[in-house]
Length: 188
Length: 170
Image (cartoon, rainbow over the protein chains, first blue to last red):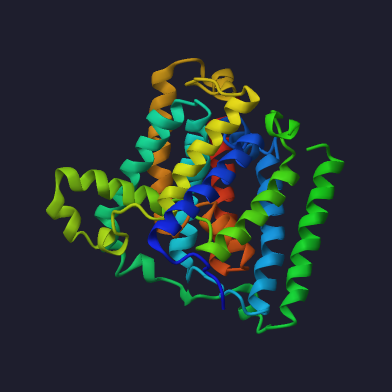
């Protein structure tokens, strides 16, 4: 195992800044920091966001599973809590449509001069985070525990491991590419 | 270096860059994510006014209010976007987005109120779901995590339904 390469606290901060810089630069170029791109995606008029995310997922997946298989990193899976994942994500979706930015793209929008992302988005998100901290311990014992399955992955629930998980990765890549071809055919 | 000043990159090319960046992040420190930073920042600000309350709150005990790798990542997004916008001449101080204006008019108060409410709702949802479109939607899905694919499906399901209601008849 070699990952994570950077272990010193100062090094982590510097690498965070470098990684974020490249991320912010790229999503600005891709117009992903615009309300119109994001709400255009939610209204199914502009597929920039899904094209970008699914391409990144596909490239990321191939690399991360390769690095895992040759033993230089360990996966870092968020546990599945079905109720919290589903209800939380639906609540997120409502806010997502109202705000028109998500946490990462909202910060990018501020960098591009979109002031609604600061006075509305950033302040609202900070208030939302503070409010969640107030209610978390009331949810912890009940709703947040419902449907808890631990750190499961699609290969693990299918009972598939190395090297056969590459069939699943290939299936995802083919599915994503077919989706892109269908989008381009419809000029979306 | 003309590509650096270009106004728009293709979503596929940008997606490849971000996919490679996910390897870089994973190998150097950890998977990409963004929303925990808002909790830490809220905690840092709140601690200023109510230090004891923040120290004893279970969520802030779990997500210590501090500046960490992801906090710097989010700061980097801000700077990277600013530099990119400046280089391509797309930086623009603007409050009301064009698509919003077309349907809801140019009132800043109206846009602010909806954006502020949206920000609150979105962050409560993200924290409950355990991540946002970066942590779940990118880092989760690329590791084939069930939580990631479930969350990203419902992010968009909720968002598509809400956007449809919001823009109905407009």
